[in-house]
Length: 316
Image (cartoon, rainbow, N blue to C red; front, side, top):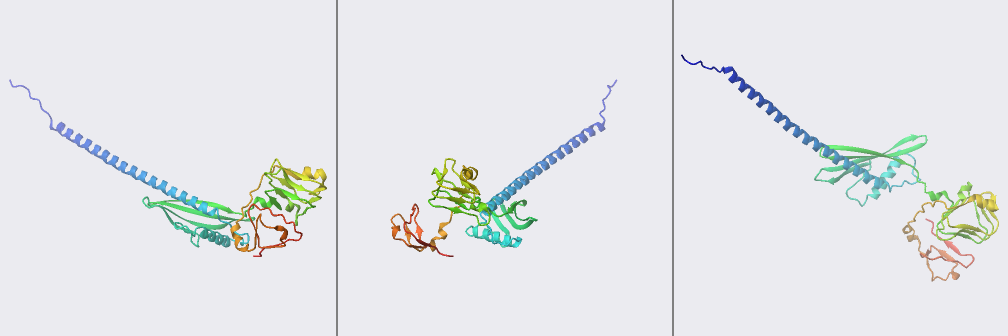
């Protein structure tokens, strides 16, 4: 008797091939997807880097313009209009930048392209304009827009600056001095329009007597002393801001006040006009009757003993 034979159906052999092909397709699709995702991530990272570089360029441009705008002063005689303020600002910027080769501000307020890093394609440019922020009260603002670039990416930052009159605190006083004030006679200080115009500030950092008056005094304004260790010495009658005697001193003499910033004069502007004699410690002032366009040497404290010394300066 012959043994029974085992039969393997061909359809099961074919199914293994099909399953293998399916797995091959799935894994191939996964590989392609992962490659595509990797490429996308690289592109996203590159774009993000360019965004950061462009933003950095815009920030750098704003800091550059903030620096140069901080030196811009508009004359008080400038008419209060957008066009006049704009022209004054552009003229001042162009003057300040006259010796700078890598940044230029055009007449229309546009800032030419500034190259920060040629290897990265990092640059910035910008635009300046002036507009009326409010008509009552009249307020103007300067708008500075800076655009930074990196490759094909750009980012823009806009800052606005209020245009306001600059009020130097020292001009709150009719009389201001760092050193002490000495009046051997009978001084009178009055305000032309209001009593505050006769206010005085005496810093007197190194002298314990900030204000000395040997005779009668009449001050319309307040007496302010910067040093908390200094005081006043009034020998005779006192009238300050309408009060008299000790009441005037108690109410209108203020010790230890905050010192305002004293401006530093640009003496170089006046040197061409100082064509007269130079007064120093070797000068015999007893023989001086006229001083015309004279220069007083640094550290000299001239005392004119002659009565009727005529001191004249140039009128420009």
